[in-house]
Image (cartoon, rainbow, N blue to C red; front, side, top):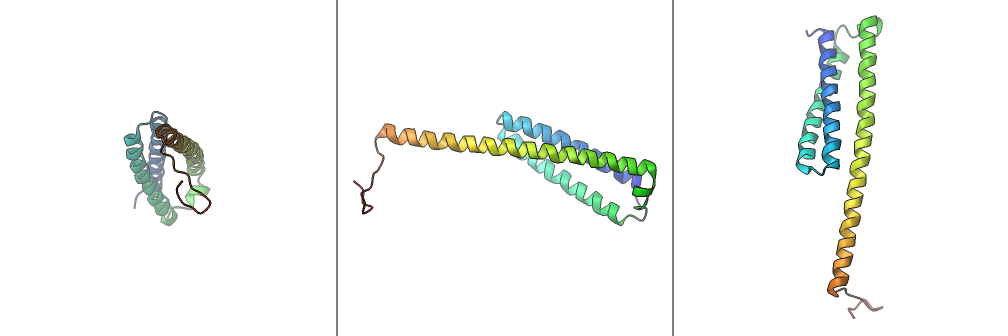
Amino acid sequence: MTPITEVLEQMSQALEQLQQCQQQELTAVVNRQHQSVAELAEVKASLLSQLAEFDSFLAEHPERQQLSTDEVLSERVAQLRSTLAEVKRQSDVNEHVVTRTLAKIDQLKHEIVRQASHARGDALTYNAKGKIR
């Protein structure tokens, strides 16, 4: 069986990689590097899957009680929880930036369509009976 300390170290590495990935994702969104955003999303999904596996492994590990009773291990768990909280905070920030970016793109699209239809003069109008005038 894998030592519990090794699993905690693997979790730590995965969380650090996830943090780096999120920073890269934010930069890619801001710089409109859409291909990079898609690639990073795949990397994030893989890392999250790994973290879920580590978590399940720890939950069934025969030495799991040491996570709360051993001072060194409980300190390590606290560090991992702190890092996880930072990952979640960064995820919220990234989600907010993506949402705002998409909203701005949608506004721009509607404005371009509106201006294009007025410039061409082919905007249709309808009478009260729904027929084109």
